[in-house]
Amino acid sequence: MKANLNPETIAIIAINNDDIIYQFNDGAEELLGYSASELIGQKKTNFFILDEEYEKFKKDIASKYKIKTSHFNPYTILAQNDDYDAREWTVVKKDGTRFIAHSTLIPLKSDKGENVGFMRILKNITNQKNIENDLLRKNQVLNAAEKITMMGNWQWDTVINKVEWSSNLFNIFEVNPKEKLNFETYFSFVHPEDKDIVSASFDKSIEDKKFYDLLHRIKLKNGKIKTIQLLGEVVLDENTGEVIELIGTCQDVTEQRMAEIKFRGLLESAPDAMVIVNELGVIQLINKQAEKLFGYASKELINKPVELLIPNRFKSKHSSHRGLFFNAPKTRKMGEGRELFGVNKFGKEIPIQISLSPLKTEEGLLVSAAIRDITVQKKAENKILEANERLEVLANKLTAQNTQLADFAQITSHNLRAPVSNLNSLLGFYNIAETEEEKIIAFQKFEIVIHHLTETLNTLIEALKTKNRTSIPIEKLDFKEVLDKTIQILSGQIISTNTKISSNFEDVSNINYNKSYLESIFLNLLSNAIKYKSEDRTPEIYIYSVIEDGVIKLKFKDNGLGIDLKRHGHKLFGLNKVFHRHPDANGVGLFMTKVQIESLGGTISVESEVNVGSTFSVNFKE
Image 1 (tube, rainbow, N blue to C red):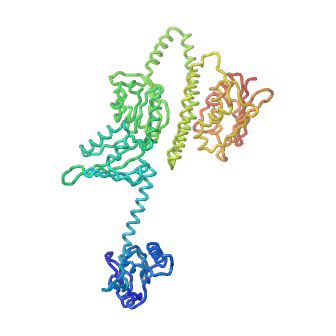
Image 2 (spheres, one colour):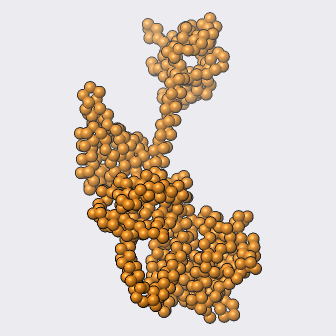
Image 3 (tube, one colour):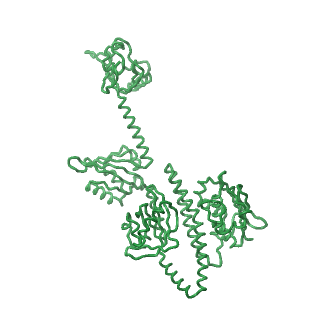
């Protein structure tokens, strides 16, 4: 038996009208593993063909010639119609192994035009099929990857102005894949306001023989607007060096662009100067407030070292401080206990306060610095110091006010910690999201939390304004609405801890109270219940209202760690008192809650059992 090593081997098998093999060439011996002497003179028309494939061949002949009966010889039909058949067959060798062959079946005619049999020509195409299947699989993977990333690829032959798109690029442009393409086809979709930019970019790419990445909008036939990102390469003629082709990718970045615009809007709406830098201390982004503060245009600072904004006397230490921060990044105020200064474009030093926040991105860790010009505050401090020297009474009063402001700063920090922590949780969900739908859902929650964070900031600012007022604003508030808002603010923590929250406000559904105080009470008691959950069971929190002895009461019941009241009951609501080893415990929340409740004539109490849970009872003024 001969080994089938030559892919060019051709097998020729001739059979007469009586289905007797009378020719079996060397190629047939090599491919099929039979010797000619074994088969010549034998009646074995279909000896190497699978029955199911023969039946398929027969059905195809019946369909082609509209034959209704199943009792016919397909070979005879081919001969009668002076036709031939070419297709792929699975061929079974003598040893039982199989290979894929391309078969051509040709009727044989005598000099008089009579059918005298047929001849089959076989060629082993197994390797070719494997390559084709591998290419098909890779193409399928590529198509799937393009759909997932909302990306397609394109080729533009600039000599004959012929354009080819991948299948997903047709999907991005929502165009029929059968449509004939050229550069004008693509250009017709370019948004009218972006046509000049796109035209100039392609002209420059061809002129400089270097493709310039391009971000622009397209307007589809149905009026929909999308934003696409083009990346590409220029192909040159080896002899002339002229551009003959441009190839590249096109990605639908509409969602990313919308997110970027929203992020940019948030950045620009910040009251402070914002400077975002990477781990190397290179500026990546600034807002208008930063331009105004330092006197630079944005393009003058992007991709420049942040040390450009730092006075020379501090530059040597700044690099080491930056390195320490990136080794253990966390949100914090920088420069407590010492004065910080920036320097503007004209060399003038500016007294500043800086808050640092780490941002985890696909490109790596970034740091957002919120920078506040405290020139006015510094001048005020100097005036206060001068006044202190003249008036001791005034100095004592100012000291007391500063202490109140410090307490308020702690309260403010505590109220903002929950939504910021929630944002971090949602960011974690966004980063591990496997589908665009999951990312969109996470981003929608971002918008909700950011909205509440902004509202909380405004509320706290208003609270600061009214801190010295003798009267506290009161309005009618709905318990369920306050709870729903609090759940939205804490949604990231609730999801990550699988916390179950239920409520019942049938006895009392609303109350006349201060809005910021009631929202703070809900936020502190709910976030505490989540924070001090038991690791042994799913967190469950039940909030309900009752009237006991004519007093409206609001109760928060949980199944968390509980508190040892014999040991800690006397200091439970004290400032900076903590009772569990939790990294986020700071002893501010319950103190603040107690102060707010008592300021409106109410009281707060707790019943608790270690490892069973706690019930906090807010008793409103009668």
